[in-house]
Length: 102
Image (cartoon, rainbow, N blue to C red; front, side, top):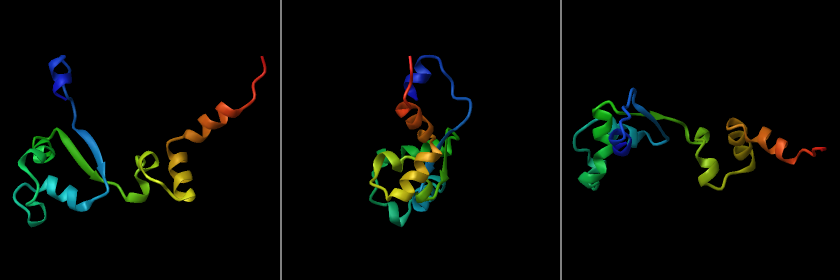
């Protein structure tokens, strides 16, 4: 974000981040020391500061619906197909493998 600001871009609305950990979301929304997060160093509390400043919004997304998992995890076929269809890759694959005539 610092580079964008340096280049003259301004943030008009908060960046939205989806997270599947309710504990992580809670720790960003409730400033202060938490027993579960006492091992986290100060430099990693940057996310909490951004939420407090209103520059970042962290929302819950169930693990089964997390679109990023299609790129980061080995998924069962059913879940892979569901997520693939949500990001509309199926149409792209069909177009890629369709025979074309010149």
